[in-house]
Image (cartoon, rainbow, N blue to C red; front, side):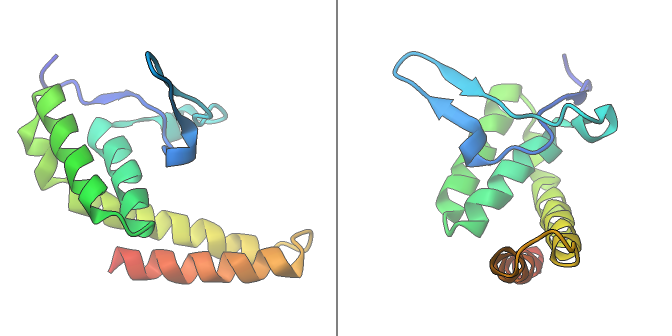
Length: 126
């Protein structure tokens, strides 16, 4: 399947969306409400999880994951795009958190957490 990298992906891949069992791997809670958010470059989906590993202080897992995915997919060129997509995904994540801060129905403790998340995402994107 070379050159077919725009696929129906997860779109929002966080570690908490992955369940590892002794003999299976399950990925759940993909973006179902909008195909445009899910039909993306495979490298973008890989970068989202890599960005989350970086955010949680695990750049080692980020590197290992991206390198192994590139090898498994036979797409070493993906590695040239990962930093771009990680930056883009961190920016979008920060923007979502900033929108959340302005929602009237969001309680103050959640707004405070959202402000912290937004700042952390902004820092991760730099």
